[in-house]
Image (tube, rainbow, N blue to C red; front, side, top):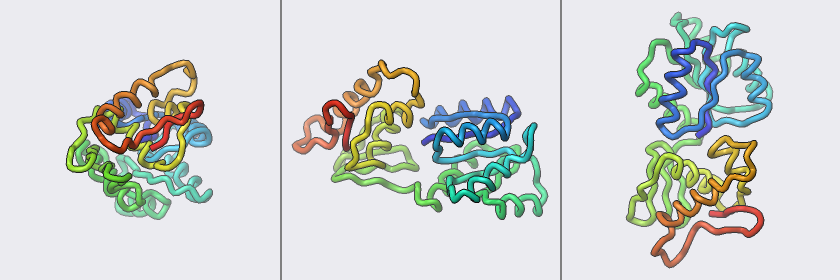
Length: 218
């Protein structure tokens, strides 16, 4: 999952970035409203974690603007503001949840899972006899659980989310590795090979297909 963290306090930003990457997510961190607006104009994300008190304004304004444009990207406000009226303001302002600092990382993960469930992004993806559990970061082919690394799971999830559609190497790099400036890398082909060994090897019906000259298809 691609997550944008909008947080200006270095320790919290570092803690969130490190912890979420260890959970297998692709994370971008910015510390100002202006920087958040710029990156959101250029990239798409699955979830926003938004601090309200930023050097150049209220992070809730970023969420409000997205909602005004019809963008429903799930957003959780992370803030030291703990008054009830401020939490209500955040929820009415378009945030999907509100977590007061300091917070426990496990609680944040639980809140994220709940928000994604409500937005329709949680749950399981099924392609044939392949099942990908988005929340638990687990996958099965038939009765066999697949032992996947975090990066392999992210790649398989992206393929499953776009089952039936051909994905170019460039799109996969951008979405799974956030690499848009190294077109010569073969990392996608390498990880597709890893996935094939775990998903398709020994199976009568392979699920991962190469579309020559374009990319890959689940």
